[in-house]
Length: 531
Image 1 (cartoon, rainbow, N blue to C red):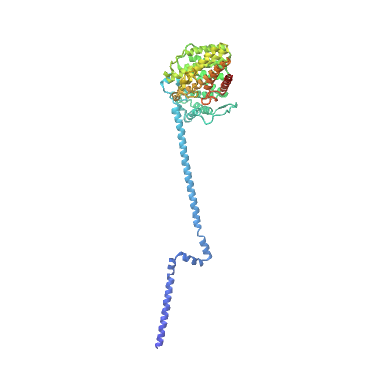
Image 2 (cartoon, rainbow, N blue to C red):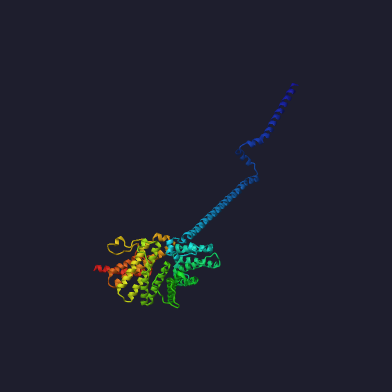
């Protein structure tokens, strides 16, 4: 009985132990997911991969695809962002450059309108009527351009002024007229702009706001530039426009006298001598306030000069043209008579005894008349030589012309007539033949161009007078005196830094003649010294 009880206890303990072990195993199984979740990934990845199927492995290899797609999308977004920024920056830069360029463009036009085309309000300048002879760009007495022309026409006019005075970057180009001439590009651009402005002004002729003188002033500016171009077609067109202005002025007043003188010069350049003589005769009559005889062609010079300074300058210019015409026409006696009468008339016009004490407008007026008289003196010296008069008479007029021209050139530049180093020898040497005009002349809108042109003409006249005196001395066998005169001629016609080159305003043909005379006389004097 005790044995049976002992065996039942063992059985019960065994069952309990088995049950306890089964419970513990079930507990472990229940806790396994928690352990797996807490285990390190590196420790579990390899065993898990060992039990994966082929489909699972393929799906796991396809997992990086979303990352690659995100990478491409991100790169495209960056590129689009950079491109949009570049476009914005480019547009802003273009806008800024355009705005700056427009501001510079309009600022330049405003400067030309307000400063360069301003009228001269100086009372002394108006007293000597330099404002009447000044260029006008449709603005009248107030200067500038006529507002009634409109935005485009006014810009074209200012562009014409800029092209004429500031240039266009190119010096010359071949003329398209088919005659093979080369003209200055700046003049061609200037006349093209003026031509377009005139066409616009013609459409506004009926406008009450347009000044009556605007169209005439535009025609005068266009004709002046065409004259400077100098081709045959340009001269014909300039003559046509001057004739239109003459008709509008009804042949009355000082302005009409100036137009008649220009028409005479143009007809002479075009070979119409009879028409040229008729226009010069009209100009003389209008300048002197005399009535021209009906059908009269021969010019009549009054013994009294006009009181108007502008009329005096117009009369003097016409007398120079007539003097040159008769000197080359073969009628030497008529030429001598006109030249002597003209010189007597010019001497009767009062001039300041001391140019330094006179006002600038008065001084410029006096220098203008003095230079024109020197031109007529050169013509008379040539006529007397052709009439076989004593050589000394030609020398006298040439010497007077040379000294007068030098005085004009030196006065315009503010240099003394007798330099300090020339007092001992008694010879007035050339002083800075390329010196600029006085700053006071350069600052005056009305006198700047007349002074610049007068300085250029005075240098050329001085060079021509000294060259002709050298020719006369050389013909008389006085080579040393001839060399001195030729040196003076080359000095005035050349450049101060390089006497082997022509200066401004000196024609290439004239320079070659003067340089050849100088070289020949220099070689002759050197040969004489060697002997």
